[in-house]
Length: 403
Image (cartoon, rainbow, N blue to C red; front, top):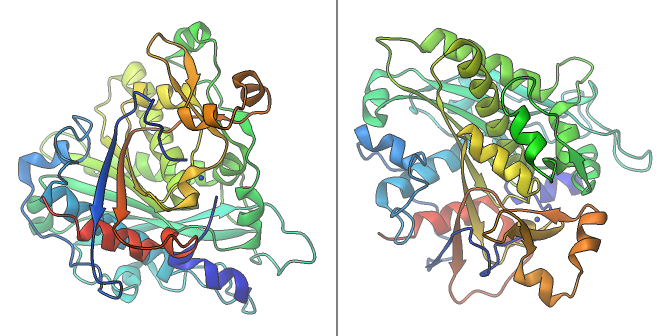
């Protein structure tokens, strides 16, 4: 497992596609310049207060991305540090019985992963079951599923006051096991189940079915030998947190799902799961909803245009942080965007490649980018496939942006 470990952690590589200039989806490009060996800046401690909903995407980050707002910059770096903690707490030792597990107890995870004094408490460890790797590859984790992230709740009164609400973070690491690599490359699209209540009439009116990448969906929905599916884990924990911390007289509650590479894809699926579940609960019981936001770093495409529309209709927000040189953000599939008339058209990059739209759709290659994109570019640097995908580089690029 030495090879997998060397390209995992904050250096996970998974192939993913930048947004076309011809798309009506909005993209912001920011060029950054910093010393190659300089560390990422300290996460912001600015008082956010009533501005929190805007920073979480209530207005789709209008006016905050170009130039990058100082408070948002600090929040992005801070959420990136949670992802770094998910990597740091994973046991990469393929020869040990503990391989694939969390190295630290929940109560001390953040401190031992390099994040002391955050004001957050880890309430749940999350696991995902991947496809069994071929016999000629290193063995999979003993229990069939691997530790892939955690849920942490802000329970420090001063931090709650600074943030303007009680924030819940769901953080996912990127690819680390051979089985996860196998799932990564299952790039065909699979149909997303139709919600049991609400949205059924809308789904019937849509010509295109909501679909997501089959490998990501399998990782999200497959149960392991010792754990329920990741989908069920996040659903149960979100329900428990809403019950414990929601209600009148309590601070506003938000959920921020963040991840890098494979973890970024799982963050989008998790945001969709929580937001869609809340949407159903509002329709059935009139329950208040938490704001759900996904912040992804170096993430691949996850689904098609119908999936993007379903996520938007659920109220979930997505901010994708993308390095222009990162090939992982350019796959899988080909980007197909709305043509402005309710239909879809191939993005310009696909037209240049002369790939017919009918073939893209037939082969299951028609993907779409979700949410808003913050595209970063390091001035004066030669592209490097591995280094361009590095989480530390992403955080340095964000931290070096000025407002």
